[in-house]
Image (cartoon, rainbow, N blue to C red; front, top):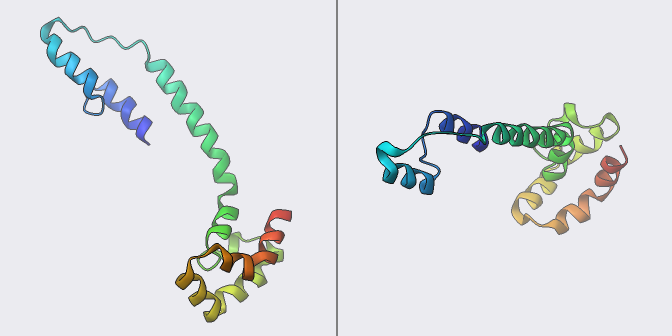
Length: 121
């Protein structure tokens, strides 16, 4: 999003996010000629950046399961793991331990089989 904002502001000749450029323009005053030969490169960079992060979108549901089993949407969980996730989400002891501890040891102790199942799917 930042890159898109930068591109927009550069096109509008707003340099608030580029203090050194802004200072140079202010010092040049009337002698300054606005020329941006690099906009194509900046837009190409934004496109490549977006493409790279689209790969993350494809695995986001699996990542959310790893991050917090208790708040993940059961519909996006692989079918062979849905029963296990529901069991975790329904268990108040697990839930209070998870939210109380915030510890990797909790995940290792109670979620190891779930993790193995996710990695194999």
